[in-house]
Structures are given as C-alpha cells and as structure tokens.
Image 1 (cartoon, rainbow, N blue to C red):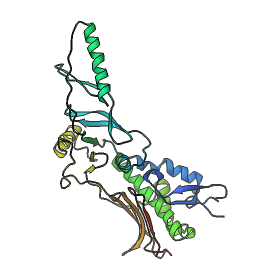
Image 2 (cartoon, protein in one colour):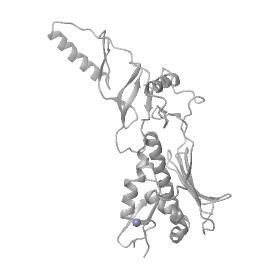
Image 3 (cartoon, rainbow, N blue to C red):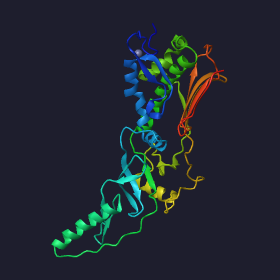
Image 4 (cartoon, rainbow, N blue to C red):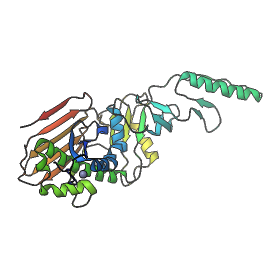
Length: 321
Ligand SMILES: [Zn+2]
C-alpha cells in the first residue's frame, strides 16, 4: 500500500483529498497520496498564506470566496478621507457606521448604504431635535461617483511571514506535482527529502526562489480597488498612503492611469517542470506571484509538463510531453 508523500505513514484508511494549490485559491489539481494528518497540518499552517491581505484582495477580484468579510478603512469621496467600511460579496463597500458628523459641528452629513436608510436616519435626527424645540433641514447631496476604494495593507511582519509560508507552500506543491506527472515513487525519492522537510516544518535550507512581480501599487478593476503595499521598513505611513492614493485615483472614480498604476487583469495559475542550466519546478499564482524550486539532477521526470488554470474563465490546460 502507498505511503504518505510527506510523513511516510501507510495510507490505508488514512488517505485524503489534498489540493496542490489550496482550494481557496481556486486549486483544481488534487492527489490522494497525502495522509489526513499531513493534509490538515498543511491546511492550518502554510495554506494560511492565502489569507494575506494581498491574496484576499485578489481572491475577491476573481470571485473566490473569502473566509471572512473584509473590514478596513476606505476612502470616502464625500468626506474626503478614510472611514470604516466592509467589503461586500459583490465587491462594493458597506459603511460600518452609517452617519458622519462634521467635526466642527457646522453641519450633519448623513451617508448610508441606501438613500432610504439615509432618509430614515435624517428623520430620526429631525424628530429628536424637534423634541428639543429645534428645527433642522436636510439637503440631499447628489450621489457621488462610484467610490474609489483605497485598500491599505497593514503594518506588521506579514510580508516576511507570508513569504516564508509561500515558500513552504511552493515546496509542498513541488513534491505533489512530481507525484502527479512523474510517479508517486519519484516524489518519494530521498533526493527530494530536503524539499519535503522544508515544506513540512520550515527547517533545512529554503531553496525556493520567489520572484515577486507584484508591483508596490496596483489597481483591481472588478472590485475597483487600489492596493498600496506597505513596505517592511514601515514607510509610508497611513497619512502618506492616503495622500498617495488621492493623487493616484481620479476624484470622479475612474480607474487610474495604467501607466502610473498597473492594472491587474490576468489571473492565471501555472505549475511546470522544466530544464535550463538546472532542473526546476515553477509555480505561478495569479500571473504575478512566481516561485521556483531547483530540483536534484537526474530525476526521471517528464520535463516540459505544465498545468494551468485561468482563474477568471475556469479554463484549464495540461501539457504532458
Ligand atoms: Zn502524512
């Protein structure tokens, strides 16, 4: 009977359906060669990189469900600043607090998810003021252009942590992909133990080379979001980021100039095995996240194998030389 690709346990009665690329990222390739314990372990550890701010935003862009509704600060063109909002399933922003008061007390600005809700709030305020013997009048503000939404990536060590998880995930997928396109026994060869070990617990050399092609700022056209990456050195701060966002996104809500802010419009996953000066497994996620693992030489592998998924159309392809 076959043994688990990662811990070597006999799979009799312990096999499970393991996704190479996590299902939360649209992963379509699976293997039954991983025991349930290892599968659960990967699911609770390295797969967490799919919940990074970056990948959460991209998952929403391509229509993949998110574990949580995203709440954060978003630019409000009425207020001219940021306020709390929540990204809804259709990609629009729901306002967390429905009314806003100008801080200097000169007026009351009411905004709600719908006009009826705003009018309901206005009615409540008017009645309360009337009970105090004061009258208030309200003027409707013309609807704003579709809100340009600026999403911020938060401080903290996320870039480094997520990078490590991404590398371990890539190593895990490399082993599984070799089992899929070559043979399970090729994936079990001791020559692949360092890659296997690194994927399991992060120990041993990190042999994964990632070439992160994601720009520091980009535009997601479907969910209309500007993404500004917070750099690990802590700059720029929130205020600077807001000012940057104001300059990048036109006030009328139209998309930013693609020459200034790249638009992320192609979302393709690809796994491949190829030979150059060395032998490689390469993983591409959503077109812009790329990681490669150098493989030991001499493996009996169908070099040139490749599998791809277009996350927008759902179209898959497989090449087996
Ligand atoms: Zn196992």
